[in-house]
Length: 298
Image (tube, rainbow, N blue to C red):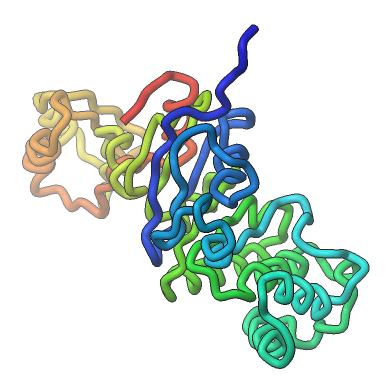
């Protein structure tokens, strides 16, 4: 058996202030791609540019523009205090003395850990450890931030705090590459998504456009009052499939995959009062399932 290519022809970009969710099953090539992007593995071909700087021609200045938070508590030394970790990693990136201490204090205050600066990392909750890891990654004010499962295993409050910080960083212009199996988090935070399968990108696009593309032409129509029999008889003539879910709710799938059918249905329902019309909206879990298990691509 010959060598197996972990990834092939994987090309994407992340703009400043944008969150790209990089998704795929275990073994698809996510970790390899992340390691190449972080300068840990040199690709056989292709280039990685950070802020316009070629990562392999100018490794140190390119890496200086990048921060990373890896899943699995690999970001900090547990037997050192939070402040010791930040000062150590700051020094490794060229920040020392008063500048490093000032930056560390600023970041810890920003994430609500100012009073835990002298605490050993191993004494912190998982949520606090994630916040401290983010501070470590942000010591150099990086242009690009790599986040691997940033909310995995966190309780609701800690996860909400991390998500809020990610949004804030993006708003301030940081380009963020997010990898996670928590698809609700990816949908909530991402501006664009990229899905990798067997080492190749099979889908890229803005999150809103992809969700819209995979949404079905299915409408739920809720009446302000129960639907009278004469109305139900009238709508049977509208092209499409109509199902009554309860006395107030109808499900309608138009015959043609456009909006014309719903307008015909509304006309048939007049003058009965309508409380709400809601179109089916796919979530990211549905999209990923179709792409990965059914081989569907955009």
